[in-house]
Amino acid sequence: MFHRSKTMKGLLSIVPGKQRLGAYRFLPIFFCIGGVMEWIMINVRIGHETFYDVYRRKKSERQYQQKTADSS
Image 1 (cartoon, rainbow, N blue to C red):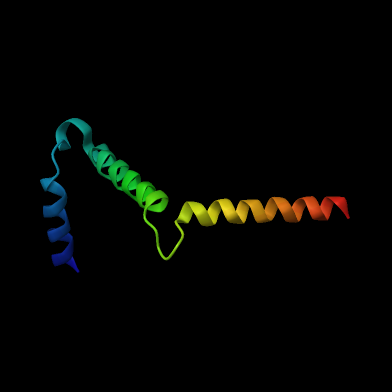
Image 2: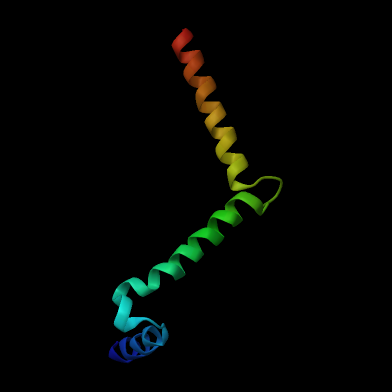
């Protein structure tokens, strides 16, 4: 277990900006990862749909169900 911790510490020390930014030096990395994930969810098609297509369809279905429930 301690060997992994030394390896992780070595990998984390490779990232520049430790003196100036401290733990916040990782924020740009995670920001870029989040941007890539968002782009994939919008643009990459799995089958015939993207994640965003499914989201819009489900939202539309919920609105329709709400309207039918309100009118009853």
